[in-house]
Image (cartoon, rainbow, N blue to C red; front, side, top):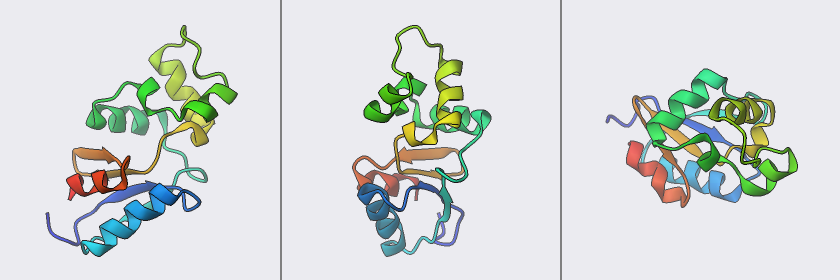
Length: 117
């Protein structure tokens, strides 16, 4: 990948892991497109695409405490119901997520975002 190629970072500036991931990308010469997903949540279709790239089920991308608070941990919820809940309550989406082309990485730990570059 060229250093100016398009990387998108789903970012929460209040999260230390998200800030660390952004700093790592910049240290490697990548200036990502930043999506502050709490203000601009991904659509259900975008989330499905990201989940497929991450090879994760929707339940695996939930922040446990926040998901519990809004009822998204119920065992009887379908994947589509969880995704709809994530769109409605973006705070429940684990972060940060870096996307480039057909690759995505969850920045837990932050160094993981480097696999997309």
